[in-house]
Each structure stands twice: as C-alpha cells, then as structure tokens.
Length: 162
Image (cartoon, rainbow, N blue to C red; front, side, top):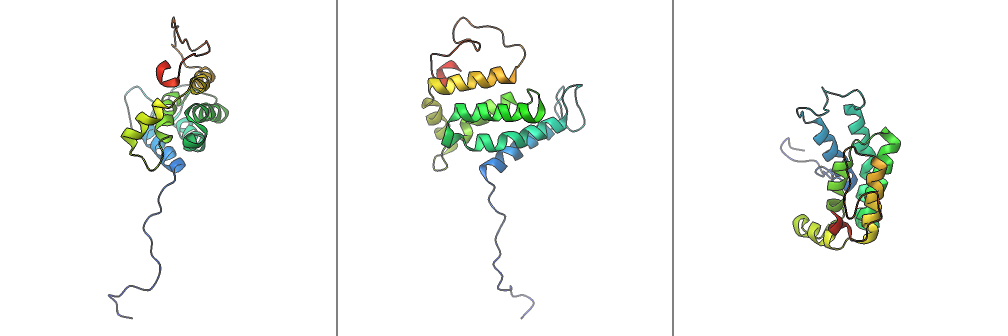
C-alpha cells in the first residue's frame, strides 16, 4: 500500500455528545472559569468547593436530559434532589433553573424559538414542582411575595410565576 493512501478502516469523527454529557460539560466549564468572589478551581468557601460543583454537574446531567420527556418541573425537581443527595448543598439551583427549559427543547426545533414554545407550554404542575425544587434547595434571601410566594402552592403556570 502506498504511503499516501488511507487504509480501509472505518474512521469516524468525534462522537456526538449526548444531551446529558453536554449538560455536565457546560456546568463543569462554568464552574471552572475563574470569577471574582465565586468558587473555582483555585478558590473555595468554607462550606463550598470546586469539587461540589463538579459533583453537582454529574448529578443533574441525567435528570435535566429527560426534560423533554418528563417535563420541565419534574426534571428540575429531580435535578435538585440529586444535587442535595450528592453534595448536601444548594450548589446549582440557578443553573438548573436556566438549563431546565433549554434541555426541554425538542431536537428538531431551533433553541431560540423552541425555548419560547417550551415556556409557553408550562403548567401549574410545572410551577408546583419547581417551587418544591426551590424549597428543597433552600436558597438564602428568598424573601416573601404577596402573590405566588415560594412557600405557597402556585395557581399559575411556571412561565407566569417566573
């Protein structure tokens, strides 16, 4: 065989990442970027370390990757429960709330228009599940609201509540 010829081996490019792998990678990359006042590989708090963010990234990947199947609310609650089980902290509530609707966009839709459609389709049940996720995460500084307070049962869709 000539040196410049290619052997008849089936050569494929890099495998496409699954949605769960993309979620985990995005969370790990976000946690890795140094940000003043935040945890990153060279900065931690007494009760929160970079390793917590990496553990949380792994914990939320599968639950959020199922958002299109099980719904935004269920996937967000499952991701927060998985995070609490793995880390015992509120390490990633914000990114879970951000990624839940994005992960629910069907593959055949463009992300920008798809997320609008997904959010329009949210239900009161989605809101109930997300409220439960927020209570499970136990974030500080929530305060109170005269309507649709996080400690109450929502009466509107998730989109309207947010």
